[in-house]
Image (cartoon, rainbow, N blue to C red; front, side, top):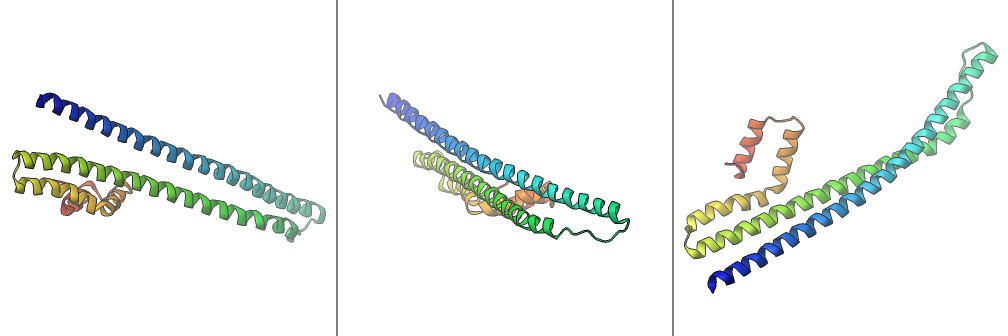
Length: 189
């Protein structure tokens, strides 16, 4: 009877874990879609403002050429009215670019939170396995501590691990230096 009871419990645990993973993935997809939509809307507005700015630049160029044709000289044509129209557009473009940066930062922060949650879930799952193995006498307390230390280090040094990986991705450090830094943190054997 115990075998069937364990089988049922393991099935329930597996179902709970799968449900949790699907829920997390769904939430992440919704968040990604939201950020993507916001970024696309702002990018469309940036493109529109940039097109208006380019038209103003073209108008300045046309005025300059007309001035050269009519006066046969090279003094600067009167473009202050065009520049006055251009100033608010340039300010709006700067605001839109700042909004885009803020959205991208929020998106990055959301990904970091999701990744940290993944680390925490992995830690909890491994801790449960190791706790069970320790209770069953399959591993010793020293083995337990050595194995759990890896997951604790990953969780405690999450930000530093992300920073080291970013340095590697940007080509600031090589694979050997990245691995040495991760080993020093106790998250790479």
